[in-house]
Image (cartoon, rainbow, N blue to C red; front, side):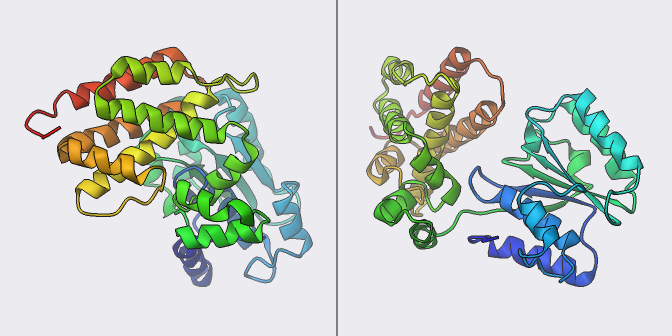
Length: 328
């Protein structure tokens, strides 16, 4: 198993392992594409690999990496009902199949309903010797405080631009490595997704047009940009999801630039700079807050694209209307 970056996360996990106290419940959180799922598998290997540090070569590590180990149970929280969760957890009362431990890996935990989270809470409040829980989430805002207080929290992070370019080159994408690394701010997962997603460039350009319309105060034009997006049959929500996430990175860059820093996403430094000059920092902060709020919405499995597009646009332009006193 090759892990790129996330040195601090790996150090935290190593500290837990050396102390002999790997947490019974762990939450790996960070932006989409920052390696949460790989780290979840790695953590499972820490529990099972006889060498102490995951070797990636033994039968246990190999089966975990292939997701076929009988004592590692995977649940996609965006697709798991409370009834299915209860059924999966019922297994926890019995002994593990092969050894002394069973590990549950629950991905996209922020998508779990409150009922599902409360169902899991019982197991976190009264941990058993042979069950461990590894949760992954792109954000913590929709996770119950009682869940957060009973889990060890480790954050994943994007690579530097240079590290991401090097990783892409190593993975056979050297031709586009530098450009993709800059555009996605060192987010290796999103850069790789762009290579496999035929409309990735279209979505990014649409996000630039959308934010440019925000900068020029043209609300109707912004909505037009959204309605022109391609509509793939396999996932009709993908266009709006990708636009919101790209717009979020652009708006964050503008906020950082206005505060005297340097934008990191590389989406469009010139446009981010124009936003920083036009809007007061309080307005830019409001943009970032709204973008973060809607990034959570579009990460959900089911959302109404038309309502969400209109609400997102209305929220941003409402914030823009408070920009009185700033030179335009």
